[in-house]
Amino acid sequence: PIMPIKPRPAYQTVRDYLRAEGKTQEWLAGEIGIASSHLSNILVKSRPCSVKVLLKLSRITNVPVESIAGWTARSEKSA
Image (spheres, rainbow, N blue to C red):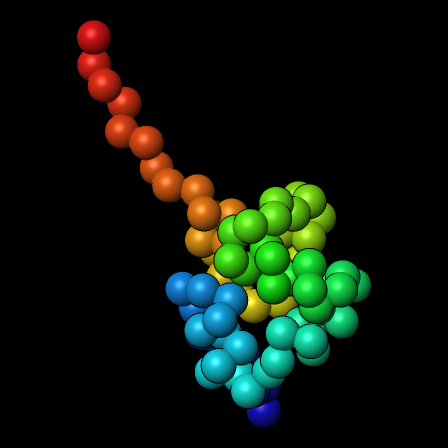
């Protein structure tokens, strides 16, 4: 029989992912290929990251790119 694919849970933050999955920042940094200190700086928003790192973080953790990058929607003001 064909086994159904279990959907991955979506997390709000990378820290939520790490906590829920029992992973460490050091593990995640290794998976991405960056220093754990750099990952820590990215997570507290004191350091920007490249698009490549941003996409890897999102893919591995299932956290939306917007949440990792700290992007917020801007409301358009009508003239």
